[in-house]
Amino acid sequence: MIADKKSFTEHDAKLTAVNIISFPEYDEKIEKARKESRECEAVITGVCKIGGYPCAVFVMEPRFIMGSMGSIVGEKITRVFEYATKKHLPVIGYTVSGGARMQEGIISLLQMAKVSGAVKNHSDAGNLYLTVLTNPTTGGVTASFAMLGDIIIAEPNALIGFAGPRVIEQTIRQKLPANFQRAEYLLKTGFIDDIVGRREQKAYLARVLKIHSGGRS
Amino acid sequence: MSAYDKVLAARAKGRPTASDYINNIFSDFTEMHGDRRFGDDPAVIAGIAILEQTPVTVIGLEKGHDTKEKISRNFGSAHPEGYRKALRQMKLAEKFARPVICFVDTSGAYCGVDAESRGQGQAIAENLYEMMTLKTPIISIFIGEGGSGGALALAVADQVWILENAVYSVISPEGCASILWKDAKRVKEASECLKMTAGDLKSLGAIERIIPENENFAAVYKSISKLLVKTLHDFNTYSEKKLEEMLKKRYRKFRKIGEI
Image (cartoon, rainbow over all chains, first blue to last red; front, side, top):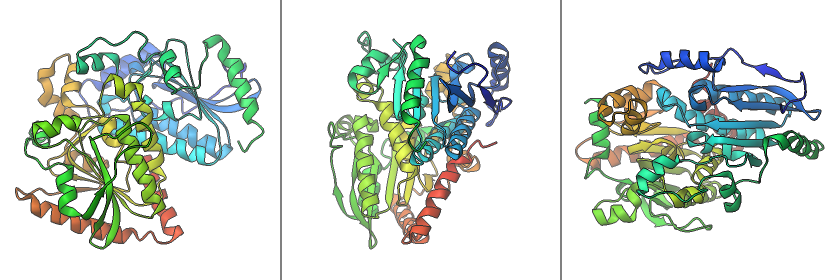
């Protein structure tokens, strides 16, 4: 829907989650997620063109264990940034995630550092990174690459936060204000650049890529 | 000790906190307050000090000692301004070529309305991003609880050390048990499964060194002090080339976690 027709080439399509710390019932969970989502992991990466402009992309998959980030999600996104750095390509990333995947323990937490490092190298080389935050983007993904875009846009009413609303309500024992952690709230508090509906995204992305196409990237 | 025993030890009342390490390991500690953007977060202590003869920047997540101090320090759970204060001091450390030493002890970054509205996720993300290429050595030491992203935000380091009875995890065992099994009572099992003890973390490559504990913490402070002096000497980052090597190694170290 966003990429130009027939322009998308997937990278690392076969990489799938592994039970890296032998967490109970995780193998079954992976198997079920693979069947339900028909994907091997919670992110799809590759290259495509948008409005004729080439870019690298990653799109998170909410049907795969709530788009949670384990080692393969971290690995695939890191690889797409490393590829884009080498080829001087912008990166467009669609996020949707419940956060780090607890069944991979510390390994999933450390993916936050790993991906952020790859984003930094891509940025230091003068390349553009744009994130599109979709509903919901929370936890370790918010606290790493979702919030590191040079440009950050969100879909209308998308829930975006570090802690989920339920956790906050339990911590402070109060009801949260309406609209709290929604895209409109983040726009008002200055944490995102704009809100762009799905239908307008292709034109928006093409325009931003066009404006950045004359630079170093 | 079982994994859950370690969790309890890491949280135990009377266990030394970041300020105890700072006071016992360094001299001339001079605290610096505030993030220059919003305010000063008492859950984060930051400042400059001397280690033997070397000027260093020291940052700690501070839980506090008695009830009154614990409340004032929000039990060591930082707000975004705490992480931004830490980053500000790290940037100054880079400017003045001072190594950065972090003491990590937190159940996690604070989950509240103010923390969210001031960008908790953005603040943590920025620390991970900036620390990866900060041009000065960083050593992070886990002294008690290492709770998730709020701990990692001070632990993108060249060397990560952990005390024998400290823990470091993606989620608390209570959180894991209640989300995954809808049963907070299975916390012991969750502690085992999460592989959060010093020994597990070492074998997973998440940390570089385990620091043995001793009932007499004076001996622990002394051994950390010795190790810091030796490690900083070995970094030898006086040439640009050595510094570049160190940064490459720092990236590689995190890059290889979960690499295929």
